[in-house]
Length: 310
Ligand SMILES: [Mn+2]
Image (cartoon, rainbow, N blue to C red):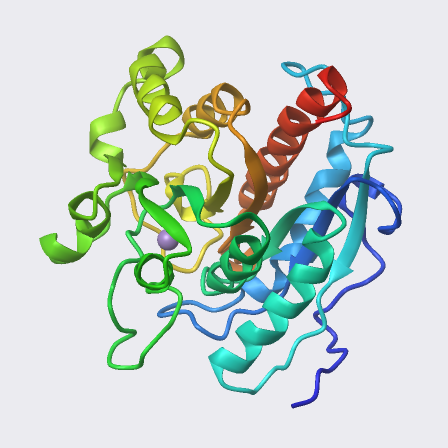
């Protein structure tokens, strides 16, 4: 299997204009793979668009956390990946590169479609043991097959549970609302996890989410936790640029409330996936993704600043 330096692996555009990755503790990494989507492709172009959108964040000083990613974050650029190999081979290469990066840095990955998360979880589990999982998405991603094929971008949560990468009772899904059979939609809950559907969150934000946030904190405790944020958790009004949009979704503000209030969890990494710039309008979607990544980073950087030895 060979890897190639394809044109979509854009390596001249860095998140928030930070330096290329060296010894910085935090890393942003592009994973430009969208070969496992069920509908509209294009997420391979997300890393460069989200980086471009992030340039608007300027000095990066966060209004809630009062820290900036600048100086402590490097951009590892885009992974060079196989382009026409079986999904398992692509994932093996993602996992290999992610493991190397995770050994040295706290990593934020920009997908790519959601199939890449399984590889990222495999690398994270090898390093930290079975993980707690916070999963924002319109879709449950617990289908047991990809329209008859073994795996795709809608099966990774099921596979992660089957493989023991995540702790079932510490798996939390937020924003779910797509069609699907009940047994599939509620799979995480039947395994002991927690699902907060988009319907359950309607009309609530800020202090109105305090009870949900307390439940999540209590459930996850100090277990090493991975955050995966499918941008389609947002309503298409906030994020039209995605492959499988589902009306009736979360607001940007609701997602920020969760990210800000859950920042104290023992997060060990994050990805933001499924931004598909070709369907975007006025860079709404890439701006939302850049803001979420910035907020996550600042939440983790603020904790590190408070206790540098941690
Ligand atoms: Mn989704």
